[in-house]
Amino acid sequence: MMRWLQAAWDRLTLYLPILLMAFFALGSWWLVRTAPSLITSAPARPVRHDPDYFLNAFSIRTFDAGGQLKNEVFGADARHYPDTDTMEIENVRMRSLDAQGRSTVATAKQALSNRDGSDVQLFGRVHVTREAEADSRGTPRPPMEFRSEYLRAQTRPDRLSTHLPVVIEQGRDRLSGSAMSWDHDSAVLELAGRVKGELQPRTNR
Image 1 (cartoon, rainbow, N blue to C red):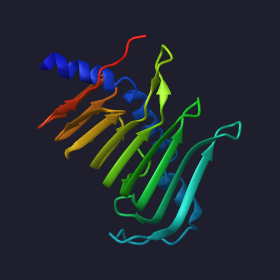
Image 2 (image 1 turned 30 degrees about the vertical axis):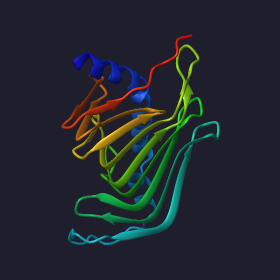
Image 3 (image 1 turned 30 degrees about the horizontal axis):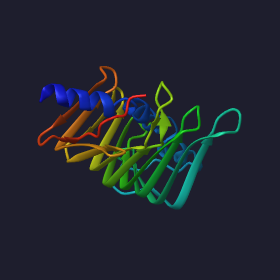
Image 4 (image 1 turned 120 degrees about the vertical axis):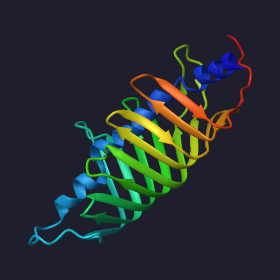
């Protein structure tokens, strides 16, 4: 059983580090770092647990030195809380492009980020999709998808986790568990609780 699960992880997590690092890259341009610069200075006031500014139906894009799109974020509404220096975004959609132009898209009903984007939490109908690509031998691989009701992405250290049920799919392959933890530094992916897997045979070339 353990060998079977190990083989399942080896197959489905082949591109997971790429997917996760593309997702973590969103932290370098996260909204909470750019939005405050748009706000004019105001007299110091006692810190409160109320929003000090709002954004509605917004989008933010960043580009590389050559003018190519790198990242973008869309949201229906956003609120900044000065006491915790965090940003809440409703109906969020984030998209990141790697050097080859392949995209990773994350959507959720709500996002909560700290100031520098090093700790981002997604709540409600979380869906992360890595665009289809080929492996080192040129064999096409279908898109990789991640679904849960909660996802926490941290960049110090690089870690992705959820304490809620999670499903990872790639084509007709499917893994699920009651909780998940991925540590990029150790390249260890763990599923806990009720772990299930459905793997389809591969055709050798």
